[in-house]
Structure formats: structure tokens, C-alpha cells
Length: 188
Image (cartoon, rainbow, N blue to C red; front, side, top):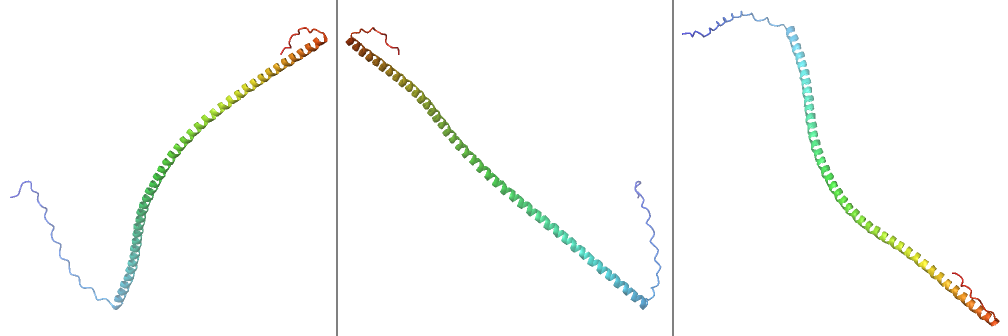
């Protein structure tokens, strides 16, 4: 029973007809065999040259591959070395940064100490300058007082001298019988 939707297979092709048998080729001559031997020897040499060229090409590829491997190894080693150097430099820079911070802090403290010392010196200088001004003013007052005292003493001496001269002249005038009029005292 064939299903209504089933496809029909195409018929298979008929088998090929049998090939006619050819007669065996004639036996080659000695010259043909020599020529054939030379051809095979030439082909053999050509194949050997090709094989040598293939070996050279394979050796060149092996060298290129080895060069690539060595370059990759060197690049990886260089990369690791650079990473180590970068890490070392980073550590060194961090140490230098800490040293710098410590040094700056110490210098900051030293500057603060020096500023305090300078402020104290300025105060001492100002006190000294004030004292010097006071000493100059005291000197000027003392000098003026000494001048005034000397002037007063000289004035008193002058008065005493005038009084002594007057008294002597009055005595001498009395002895001579003259009467002296009262003259005003000389002004200072």
C-alpha cells in the first residue's frame, strides 16, 4: 500500500557498461628504459632540491617562531622589571615625601621658635630704645637743672659781690665823709 502523499523515487541509473579490455602495452626498449631512468633521476634531484628548500623554509619558520617566543619572553620580563622598578620608585618617592614632610614640620617648628625669639628681641629692643629716650630726657632735664642752678649760683654770687662792693664803698665813703645815696640793685 502506497501512501497518497508519498513521493516516488526516481529510478536508479543503469550500471555503466564494462570497459573494454585494452591490450597490454608493448615492452619498452632499453633506450626507453634509460630515458625513463634519467627522467626519474632528474625528478628525484628536483624533489631533493624541493625538500632542501622546504627544510630551509621550515628552519626559517622555526627561527622566526623562536625569535617571537624570545621577544615575547623578553617583553614579559621587561614588563615585570618595569613594574618592579615603578614600585620601587613609588616606595622611594613615598619615603622622600615622608622625609620632606618631617623636615618641613621640623623647620616650621624652628621658624616658630625663631619668630618667638625675634619677638622677644624686638620687645627688648623697644624697651631699650624707650629707656634710652628716657635717659636722654632725664639728661636734658638734669642739664637744664644744672644750668639753672649754676645761673642761680652765679646770680647770687653777683649779688653778693655787688653787696660787698657797695658795703665797702659805703664804708670808705663814710670814712671820707661822704654819704652814699641808696642806689637800686643791679638787675639780674
